[in-house]
Every structure is written in structure tokens, then in C-alpha cells.
Amino acid sequence: MSDRSRTIVLATHNPDKARELRALFGSLEGVDVVTAGDLKGDVPEPVEDGSSLVENALIKARALAAFSGTLSVADDTGLEVDALGGAPGIHAARYAGENATYADNCAKLLRELDGVPTHDRSARFRTVMALVDPATGIELTVDGVLEGRILDAMRGDGGFGYDPLFALADRDATLAEIPPAEKNQISHRARASVEMLEVLREHLGSDG
Image: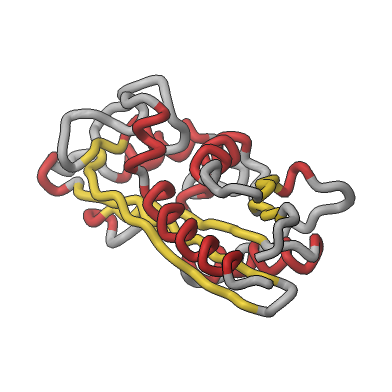
């Protein structure tokens, strides 16, 4: 890698996700990490019509890389609830409808699991991250998984999305009850980010 600064664009307009990802990628030295929201012009909003997290992550990363001409990283996250056959899965962000709020999605999940006992509420967050380099055409994906269970009531004021309902498998705490710094060390997105950091270091290190 040359000694000039490199830029990586994160394919998100979600301020909550952007904040987490900036913190997670902060250890990359000599690299400027920006988000799609920092770019000028009509940044594309591709239709996430893939049939898997991998496909959706690549759709977003490819669109942003083509627009910016810059190394781009996108992620797609799903919530897999075993009692619901893996739903909401890739539709987690729009579970209660196209313009659903976090509260709307959580409310629908609680309705769907009404009457399901605690021991049958196992679930996991899964994040797939995709890297697309428009200069070389290289495309790579990694993933991260966090196991837990869905509670019957929301707990905690932190986090976002389904965090107040998602209890960690190894303790009696939700993702909304633990400090942000701790979440950034153990979350599904953090685990995918650790894998992506290694990919980026290798990729950037081999770039002359």
C-alpha cells in the first residue's frame, strides 16, 4: 500500500449503524472512513431484492462502489427466530411494513411470539459484510453471528432495532442494557467487522 490516505465508504444512511461502524473500523490507520451520507450528489439507493443477506450486502456495496469509484463496504443484517422458521430473516428492517419504525417491528415480533415459551425463543442476529473494490473488481464477504433469545417484553434504553428484545445467550441482559462500547465488542456486526478488518488490512496491504 502506498503512504497516501485511502478512503473506505460505508454503504449506510442509518445514523445508528454509521456510529457503530465508524467505531468498529476506527482502528484502520491511514484510512479515511466515511459513509454514504457524507458523499455529494444523488447517492444511489439500490433495491435490496436479493434472496439472502450475502446478495443484499453485495447489491449495496456494488452500487456505492460504482457511484463513488471508491472501495466500498456494505452490510446486511437479519434476525433469525427459530420458532418463526427463521423469520423475519432478511426482512428484519421491514418486518412490520415498508416504513416500519423500530417500535413497529418489535411489536409485531412480540405478537408473532405470543404464547411461545422462553425455552423456544432462541434466535440469532446474523450480519454479512461485503467489500467491493471498483479498481480491481474484487468482491469479498464475511459474516458474524450472535446467539440469544427473544424476551416477552422490551428491556433497556440503549441500542436500536430489536436490541431491547434480544437477550444474550450467556447472560441475563439485552443488547439495549449493555454499554455501547461493550456491544461494539460482542455484537454480530462487531464480529463481522473483525473479520472484515482482517480482509481490509490484507487487501490494502497488498495494494501497491
